[in-house]
Length: 304
Image 1 (cartoon, rainbow, N blue to C red):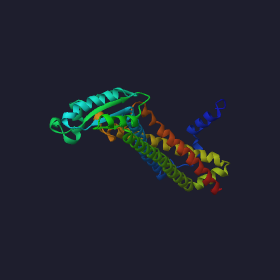
Image 2 (cartoon, one colour):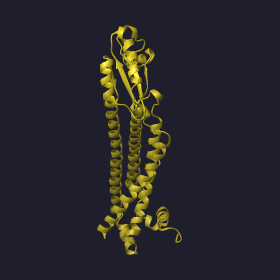
Image 3 (cartoon, rainbow, N blue to C red):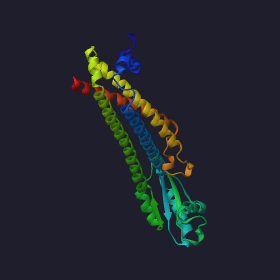
Image 4 (cartoon, rainbow, N blue to C red):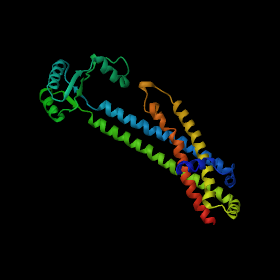
């Protein structure tokens, strides 16, 4: 390996290991089981934390896209004035700079909007249902305050809703949930590092006699620590891979309600987002490498 770059040579040396030094690390026992189970369980939880962050990101983007550049004009007027006020409102909207289009919703569309609350077959003709006008803005937008003032003068029964009071809280809430997901990932990584550190310290303490023998024959602490780092890193990588696979299967088995599905039914990653999952075992192995190396060198220094 003399002709290889130093980092590549160190990685190959870590993977290859040293049979003599590996005997200082118990191949079985509660430390091996603890490391595997911890890595698998933490990675399983990390899959769902990552999926939560990705799903809330998609949800925030969808809410922002659906509510941006749109507004709704609601006209509440007596039945005999409804048609006239609707025509006047459409004329005002057509003359307002920044509005690309405006159209009144059909009765069937209004019935579809009310169906989740009142059920199918709602008799719109017998109820004083307001007339809704869907407004689409241009990229530059329009003067909402000026439009409200003009509508108040010309269309007394009109009320403009530019969706600002709906969009901003929803997007902010989704952003906070996404932040909680990433925070959960950091806490999971910290918990995994703590558990692996304890397992490594326990293994070092249990093999103190073997370590003394290795030192007597000239082994240095870095040589002994490398065996622990390799064994615990590979155990963590194996356990994390198992946890990642189980988490991915759990996400795949979540019910899919299609376009009508809610937030939980769309929790699984979509498209290229699945490529994030294989990174979790690698990050877990990197965490184990750093935690085990620090714990091994610190413990060996105390045993000296």
